[in-house]
Image 1 (tube, rainbow over the protein chains, first blue to last red):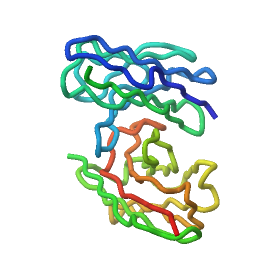
Image 2: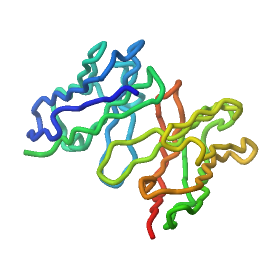
Image 3: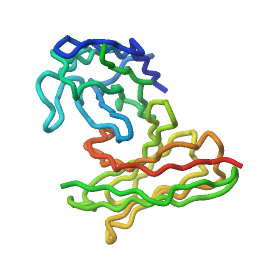
Image 4: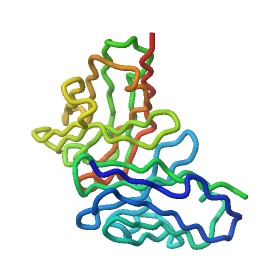
Length: 108
Length: 118
């Protein structure tokens, strides 16, 4: 099973600042099969990015993904108030599909 | 608009059973692969089970294999999860989710809470 480790656990930033979230995999993620989700309190996760860097429908371009192999990054170039949430990475390159434990982006 | 509405959650004793349902609308359900994903309180999501659009191909996480059964009724636009021999560690919000492409979960329901406790 591919274990995903996200860092940091919590990121305290102000609106307008840049957020950089990391996701490390215990083994190489095949074929760039990595996604990112955003989750707000009481709601289901929402797909942001898939295939490492492809934004899902309706996702603004301040969200971008990068990386390969075992190291991946989600970048939010300028935080909007609605971006403060928990973010999860997920790999779907090998069974079972697995998620990271999340990074909480909170208002500083 | 894609809508997924889960139901059937509740409080059950260890060893008990529950059947979750997911009613789908707003998209051609019979053409979509579907999944169940769960999330324990304060934890990351955990993929539980997958079914192909026809229901002929099915996968399970090791943690539920032999205890949970996924099924679908394309005539009723519905997805199901039969959960038997429930354990405390099965306590979670259970979501149904459409599969955009072999493990990408692009639409989620609001979830239904399953609590396993005596």
